[in-house]
Amino acid sequence: MDGLVALCLAARAESSVGSQVCTSDGATLAQQLGALTAIPGGTVLVARTEGAVVGLLLGRLLGPNPFTDDVSLAVEALYVDARHRRRGVGHALMVGAAEVASSAGAQHVYAAPIPGARGMQRFFVQLGFAAAAAHRVTSTVALQRRLAVDGAMVRRAGSRGLEDLIARRRQSRAGRAADKAGVGDVVRVGDKENVPFAEDAPAQPSRLSISKQVKRAVQTRRDAESSTTTS
Image 1 (cartoon, one colour):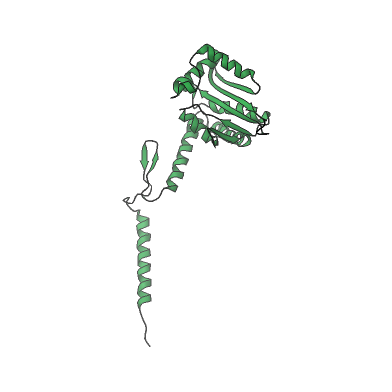
Image 2 (cartoon, helix red, strand yellow):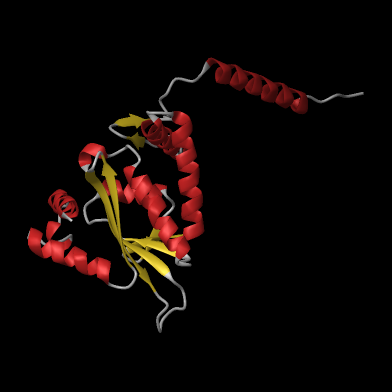
């Protein structure tokens, strides 16, 4: 419990709207976390490294109720200690959440990222969560499939798997953005600007050659069409 409280307070301090995350009083926070584990469907997952708590996931199984016959898992908080990020901790916690959802027959997993945590927003987007009111949602089956694919990629990549996976995703997104860009459009990637089809960019030699051939063919056709023959 002490490790959970410490992580929650760290998440509060990191958020730009800390008061919306949790109380700043450790004793009160411990009681609230205990209450979450006692309510029906309350879910608390903890990630440990060498005995230290480095990540947590707080959730609840919801439904059925008068408004829906479906069961779903609501992930209310997911946080990883800053010193242990990009090591698969968040991925492991979401694997556990997907197993909880599947075991309970929940068809969907909802997530409410901690306010101000942009990295966590990107993390859920990469896992296939789509916007749903103030939450993000994905089907349990789709989440398990995505987690399995990402896990296989990380295992094949080795010790630097997560860093390489993130780099490949960024490169893929940059490529898609460049394909959609028009003439003169500027695509921003990180702190750099790529101008894939700038109007003032020098033409490639192969394109110049093709252009000359096309112009020559058009001129030849015009000359032939404009000539007349008399008998």
